[in-house]
Image (cartoon, rainbow, N blue to C red):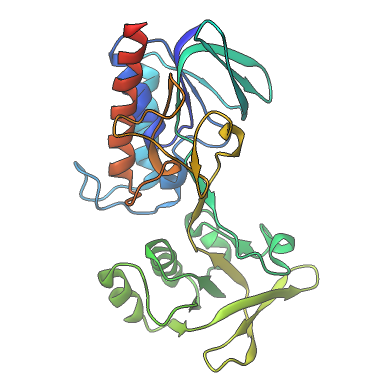
Length: 301
């Protein structure tokens, strides 16, 4: 049996594991996809202390190596449910097996948000992508569209502008919501066009994506011909499996300052919880606090 099970292998979960391990606890980290979370999609991180510039994948690898060196157990499985046992322990049930522990830290992060328009699910992975780092090379010398106006969209568009023939940024608002520095850099690119006040109506094509229908700034329907679309409109939490043991606010986990939830022995950290700032630095902070709180909980028992 483990002392602490961390659900999620992003920066919050990996930091939580590190702090718990250094406190002498037996730790298991369960991640359903790839370790590192959303930061692995960032080609360049320049606001994380200690590094002038580092890729998200490289930072993730360093974090994983560190917790493995400290003795963490890891499992690539999806957590389906958590049972609260009468003796105070928890049973974490996955799609493959189950694990026993004293405390759980939920650090499930968030997933890419969809537009919810016709044709979207059909072309995801075949013309529609969420990661320029992963798929940008497929569109070298081609015409692409980026949907969104926040930091993630601006960063995606900047990366694509380096190799794509043209980049069209479609934003439903009248201005960008991302950092001015990124917006200014993007609009200075000769191969970038910005379309404000436009909403996506549909994705079209037969076997592969060939266009995106929008309601343009004049309220008229218009089809933009494209080789690929990158959707960057934010993230959505994945906490439905834990709705019976934690309080959810618009899908995010409500927690106290010590990262405790309404269920004793269940803690949370990172982008999956209610918070105003979602950055790698704040996720790491959450992870440290959650781990120390979980250790204190176990030591009191």
